[in-house]
Image 1: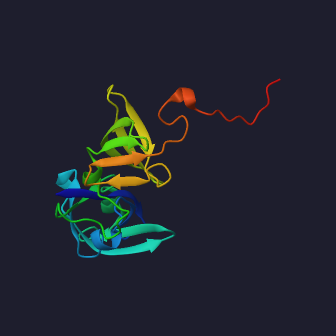
Image 2: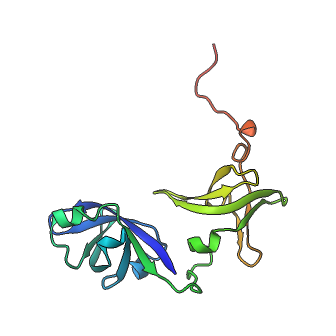
Image 3: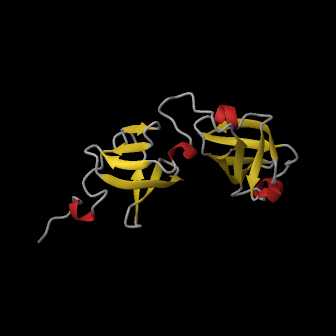
Length: 181
């Protein structure tokens, strides 16, 4: 099975390094020197990681055969894809691969059906569960422990504790810094 583990960002310097947006909880395993990764678009790869380092909090990679800024810039927005055994699970029991979460039923603590996870949206600061509701609409649920306290893979469900307004706009609490005159 294939998993997206990173997206290539802009070129860094003149020697072929690129910034990467990491999309795996195991970058030291998936993005290590010597790793061979498929790509999307496939015409760019496969790419073999030559070196990796952290600079100012960002991971920088250099790939074999990419030796200058022009070649590095041509890789921008390419997705890096690792081949993973479908039975493999992350070492941390609080971490999950996207394929483990897709199609889980989403329910509130009291058992109310919310919908089914259709996609995981990876944003820079947190992931979002894209949940398709029974009526066909979608709701975005921040994938944080306070809102999603339980993932039960055996029961194929995610239990959520949504704050007011997350599932129903009419329950939203509106905060305003200005006073009505």
